[in-house]
Length: 170
Image (cartoon, rainbow, N blue to C red; front, top):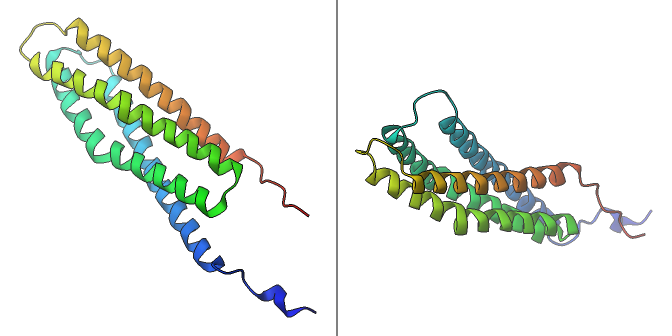
């Protein structure tokens, strides 16, 4: 029997460590993002009166969740996906990297600026009787862009778990 069967490829042990690190980062980042989504959904739901006082409080909370969970979660999510792509360099991880990049671009370039604009209006309107039309339009746009991220993240999750392994060349 040939003895070289038991020799590990160079960097095999380190590659496993990097993959484990990537999976850990991915789990934490994805959890932070999903936790943020659940928080945002809870803030939008319910039967309470949604007046200027409510939106003032809501926007204050949303801004803090974005800065403390959403942005760090997106950073971990993208970094982990890129790391896992570099470890495996398979088409699955390339597609997942593109999906994660689209999610981060949507968040940083569209959702967060709209959210900050909506928050600024809510903070200025706290003493008014009615919620302004510009605030409700921005809030609606923010919700639609967030739903698009939800679809991207669900697609990522489905591909992550259900993409069949690629066949090894013979």
